Length: 351
Length: 262
Image (tube, rainbow over all chains, first blue to last red; front, side):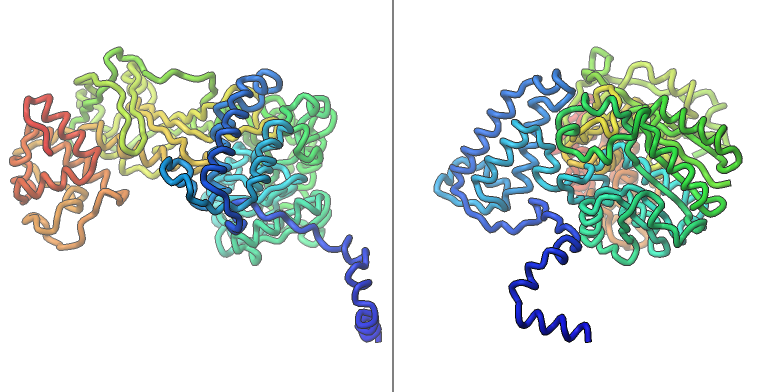
């Protein structure tokens, strides 16, 4: 009855039913396609593209060390490297650009020439992160789609995947079963952990942001992991009530920057990245503490956890908290340094 | 094998000092954890001849792969204080993880809080192999992870080229890893399995054994060819098939007053 009425109304008012806002707001946001995956549908004269490149180089060079002096942002040399990567992603045959002789030749690009100017202007003038400009980040052996509203995965976080690898090699039972990535963002950790676990493991990737969840799903599909990584929308462990006490492992790169430090971050981060993924409250510990308690009830005995922290003091505070306030919940606690020697991660096992 | 003496003909810049201008950077040992190798059989240590020798100094060169080699002057103390000295070929036999644990990784990062604070696509990686002081770097990829893998595979090649094992010519039998890289027409090849080429990761081990032999016979390709059941021409072609192998052999030949192979 209900369905026949719906179909009748759609016949009578096809335009209205398409526009019905209720449907639109319920539909998940559609992720943007990263530049490198767009079809090379546009043509530009080689000389015009070379002119663009020369302009972009001048822009990058004029930055000098201004940004790095201001807020630790990129200097010219880094921007010039990014420009090469932009060319790599946007131009079908990037090598053509360095040829001098074929002035009349045309090149295929994945964005219109005007957009290329606009993208580089955004990079320099607005300090838009390069990863948002090209819509992707190379992280470990993955190329992950990212866009505004989704935290750009950091190289430091790659280490968590190695920590999981060590943990499952030491105890193969951890490999088979459920893992969770809390605050998955682009899905980076969830996807990489699923690939480490292999066919017997499943990852539940959780994010509060519908935009992040949509991008994470897009990335999961790109790596054909739909069967092994499920993305759920919600706050931390809330969407995981059905698997309480069943998790083999929990990983997270939660927001951990103290609120007072947010405004002084480099412009790429403070102006463009989602504050939801960065601000960890007054001392940056709010979410980490919440995660520790959640992990204690969600993990199986001998289950593994690895959390990223703001580093050094915060790692020690998290460790102290677990040892003093959550006595007996976890064992084999460890602080692990990142590749820059900063004590970055806290790991341990459910008692 | 029991008394194989580890000798290294590591070359380094005439200043003797690492030519890298060290950027303002923090570096750390892999994962903050550090493995020490304690092997059951310590005979090599107790025979008292496990020292490295720096024979000749040469300038840092760019390799075809883009790798750069440099050596630190004080690594001898590293060897005795933190690492059990191992045979050169054993480095190459190590898993990536083990070899990595002997390395310092330097990511060219400026010091600072890192993590969520930063947006910096600085993905270059430099590995310094502490027992030998050999460094390899990679920066061409956008992912640090891939650069680390590339640097590690370069390090393996450099270890093969730079760390020498002495061999006893009287009792010499070409090791299997060397036999594998020989052309199938070699008379010492019992199985006629296919020849491993320069692009195979296993080539480095064979290459190391081949350079060891060429050093032992004083650079003579014809003498080495006899030991390998090959014609001089066939061995020359093998040596010329890989740029870094050719370079290593030719440097040694020039040093001995011989003509370089062409």
